[in-house]
Amino acid sequence: MSKFSKSVLLENDEQIIEGIKDGNSFAIDAIYKRYYPSISHMILQNNGREDEAKDIFQEAVIVLYDKVSKGNFELSSKLKTYLYSICRRLWLKQLNRAGFGNSDIRGYEDSLFEEEDLHNSIKNLKKSSTKWSLP
Image 1 (cartoon, rainbow, N blue to C red):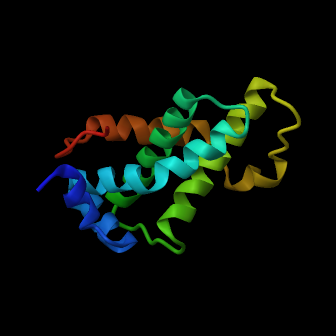
Image 2 (cartoon, rainbow, N blue to C red):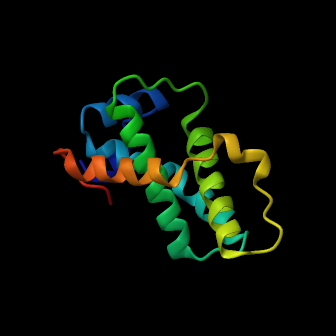
């Protein structure tokens, strides 16, 4: 069975979250196959490049992985909505830092991830011994 067909076996958000908890690389593959295209489209349509879309999505997956790994993660929306929201906020923050247009993120400030939190998530991910690596 190919890698793609195994990731398709993860049919719903709960199975993907459980896969992340179990260190199943197919869970991450499923996330990329299902959700990256819409994130890439959103960033490309808003002054972004493909490499920036990949970076933003990678950061969002790291945040998700870190939260799920802590064991108290509860998904209160669709996973697609959750990841899109993280990516959108990270992208708005990046646009604001770069001085692009009138990217007003003041309305989102209370829910934006702090830079330090993101760096801590990445550092914790690198320290942990995972059964898989991020694509």
